[in-house]
Amino acid sequence: MVCIVLVSLSACSKDNVLPQSLNNTQQQTLKTNTPATEPVVVGTSTTTSPVTTQQPTKDTESIVYENTKYNFVLKIPKIWNGKYDVVENGDGLRFIYKANKTGTLFLITIWSKEKWSTDGLELAKNIHISKIGEKGDKVYTLSTPTDVQVDPSDKKMTADYASMWEDIEGIKATFEFKK
Image (tube, rainbow, N blue to C red):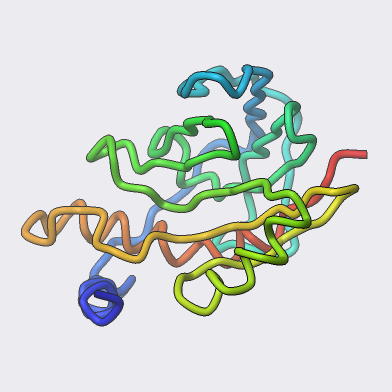
């Protein structure tokens, strides 16, 4: 299964994607304060002052995603604007590629330290999951899907998803707890 994903993604490298230019230097902040009892798509945004990052992503401009429930922020590349949704569930968040409505880009999961030490470390041997933070008795992880998330026959969608996929390591590096 992993081989299929790697082959699919390598066939859709950024060499097949036209570069996208950015015209707007304003930062957008997304916030969520929803209860964990029911999934919800977070879609509110406000415009604030410009922000630049220290090259964690392909572009120097970012959208700051702020989660008030779990008290963290991430910097998302500005070129992702309008291309993703965030769905909240009981134990974290799922960042979804909007073009196909179900394609997971990545997940942020909040674990208890105990559960992470018993289940998470073993799981990390089998899937793409990384510990990105720890606060109090909670461990925060970022994971990526292990199967194909878009229809490989749709070349445009596959290339767009692959381009966004390349940004995930940079996004992971921007994780920080709010002060």
